[in-house]
Length: 130
Image (cartoon, rainbow, N blue to C red; front, side, top):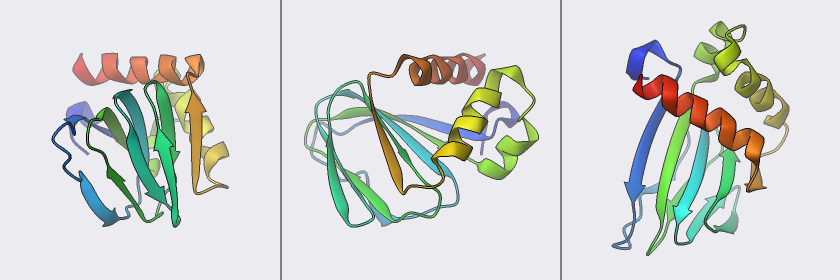
């Protein structure tokens, strides 16, 4: 994972041309996807979830998933749990770490306009681009 030794990878993706961002895949990192505009179809654990603007999905570690859309703009984060454990006492990331630990019992979690999660992701953005 790349920027500033953080246990997080982040990317902004415009899927307005109908491109499948990634086919079915899995990884050790937890994936967090924020829908900025349009609609996003996310297939996780053989279930398709349609996400709308301001919705956020956490996809658990090692879950097979894919994302596709004809018009979505998204920001996605991959959070490396093993590296995140090293930062568990860092005030900037500890809330996210403990939240992720609680989410590990399900293949995915979807949130509608959750201010606490948005605040955490904003902190990550500030740290990431500092």
